[in-house]
Length: 457
Ligand code: SF4
Image 1 (cartoon, rainbow, N blue to C red):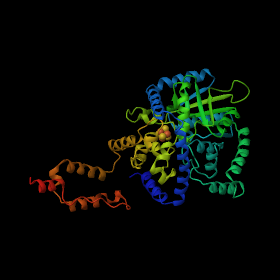
Image 2 (cartoon, rainbow, N blue to C red; image 1 turned 90 degrees about the horizontal axis):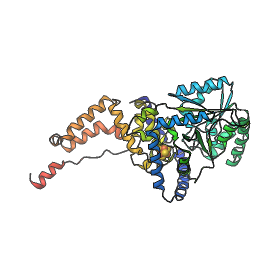
Image 3 (tube, rainbow, N blue to C red; image 1 turned 45 degrees about the vertical axis):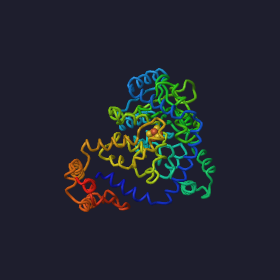
Image 4 (cartoon, rainbow, N blue to C red; image 1 turned 120 degrees about the vertical axis):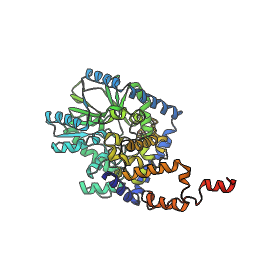
């Protein structure tokens, strides 16, 4: 068992019985569920839209190289610069080089899980560059010294009172401040940060090949502000985010909004195709195209559909395991079902294979996914990969080998009585079965014994 697997089990054991945590998550996901139900009703043919989106993503992934080069050509023509980063450290190195060259001491960031993936903030801190998160949820978790809890709702684990307490502690605001007062206070702080930052760093929801641009989807306007004020804009994007055409957005924008928050459309949707052509906005714009294990996942024919993900977060909200153990237990940038599927490929199968087992395989995640990723099936494929790559324990291999031999032969199965089999189950599997479930009891008589008794042969 890897260290990460042990830590995961310990953290899950603890948080699953934290009733306060459970209440907060149930409350927030409950509100999300209500919004999504009414959001989906606006679709006349939701299944058709989902199938179309899945087809577009599949087609795009099959020609990823073509579309990425098309984007690069068009974006450079628009005046932008493209940086190809094979790994997280390459991306960080290149971003650091730009900021150092331009003598930037402060950056404003709009919510980006890709920058979390490459650990950008930690590296900027080493360079003494202030990285200010400007999405309200991200700002809250940054002030609390925490990481995002959820890919769409970073502060989902905090109640209104938790946030009021935090602002009281950090900014001496009244401990009974309302969400409106907290938002207004944050807005005031961030206005000054936008105006004094040397660079704006964003992710991108989509990359558009035909126009050579990126898109930003948000509800607060902080992403536009992060782009509009500073003289440099750096967007860090996974290569799988590409869409062939700006025309695909009429399908993907509503799907992302509906499945992400239950809105028909997110409040602000921007398409940015390069640096500003006039004196307003960024003079330089860079797009960092991040691979970081995505090509390896693309090479796996059965698993590449995981790259279709548009990071709507719906599978997290639907997952009974996520609802019990919460976002931090995963100890990964991307949590929930999609995180369990992609993290072993983006990081290490040995360290993160245990996530494939953190699933009831109920299929809820697959059901809600707007791009029809068969998430629960991909979890099974990860389990198979872990076995094929030899990451299982020798004791597990021995038990499985023996079980296979016995289960394949009726004569061997019938060699021992039901009570002996129950003893074997108890001895070998009790620990894995866990302390809170009763071990299933095998029947005293086997099927063939019963058959012989009833049919006389
Ligand atoms: S896997 Fe599907 S449901 Fe989960 S975040 Fe990605 S697009 Fe949304």
